[in-house]
Length: 330
Image 1 (cartoon, rainbow, N blue to C red):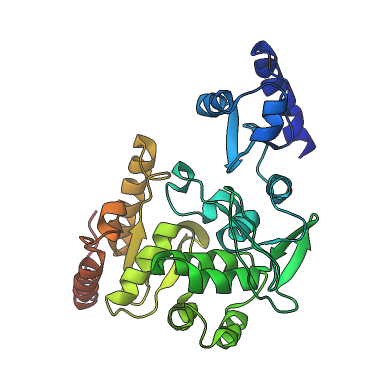
Image 2 (cartoon, one colour):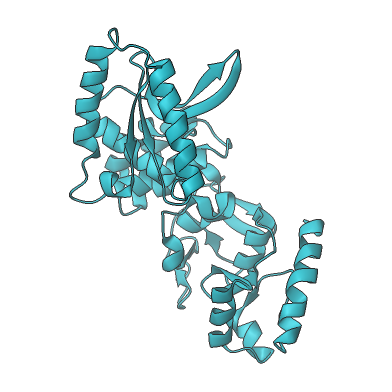
């Protein structure tokens, strides 16, 4: 962290000085704090657009070169969350996992901060938070760097029952499981504590499908299409070995059928080098290892016109039928 801050100080401080600004270069700050230093919100937005700053939360910025960390996210939240409230839901997931836990394009419309007071206290009323009252049990909230936040398990349970879509619910539980703070069995055992509460039916349906090996929102959503197609539970991150060394991984599939599905998100599978690498890797797997690989992008997996469910069902049937007759292509 210290090394990262030193880089930030040498790279960002001169830029801000040239602009006549005296903003913090190693800590997050609010729009209100910037205004006290004579920097208007419009200037902050421009600096963010230019890459000098980045927006962490509604009304909270940091110098762009300050490295991501749970400490940084705690410091940002501490600026806007009252000391008698606790952070939960998507905001708690963001604290634990960073921006990778958010759905694609979430940065285009930063969601309000989810923080609540325990039952019997008044709700928070400001433009930065989505708030109200929420009951929590002993052990549901823990302190991290002075901030009260729902535990990884309670966060997973809340995401699994309260997010607006099935995709977001499953991805939330997947992401929280990947923290390794609790096990899939502990997740399942905790479901019934929410009996007759909002969202519990969907929680019961999705919790058994949660898997810590899912690496993105797109992979979790594609896995739901896989289940909707009526296919057996897939293996995730299937390793491919050459001479005992793992050289590649497949997002999900059935090794017994040599059938796999992969989700190509825009962030990591769009530029020419990525496309060339993906094409070469999959060509080798198909030709030399006989894998049947179906590739999906955003337009195939989302929306009313999504084709993933039908394609998966048809491709899996074809892969299973041809398993013993596929031949190497050199």
